[in-house]
Length: 114
Image (cartoon, rainbow, N blue to C red; front, top):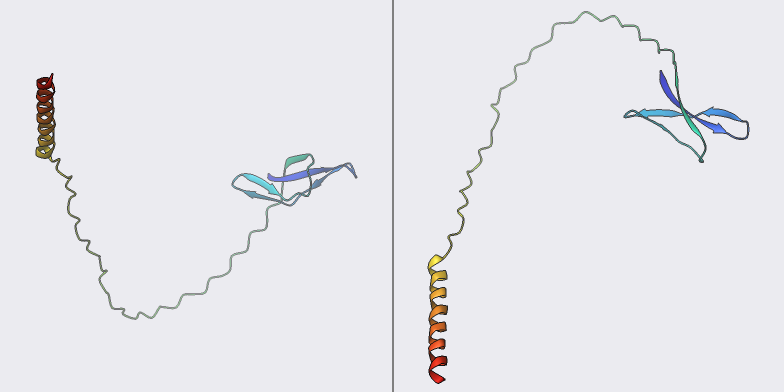
């Protein structure tokens, strides 16, 4: 069965067949206005298969030698491994110690005044 879209025409009170194309299991037709649409399946006679043409007798081909060039494979340069940056632990510990020392000195002078 071949699907076709029909549209209902109010004036003659009959259905009119639309030019329908099938794309990806979807029936597509161009319409001019909104109305009732129906999808029908119709039996279409198969198109006659083309008669096979007689094949001529093959003539032996002329072989011409072609130079063989080996394919060129591009060599890629290896990328160096990415080394994650090292954490500067000595700098972090030094800053923490400096903050503690400043806090102790400030506490000492603050308690000495009172």
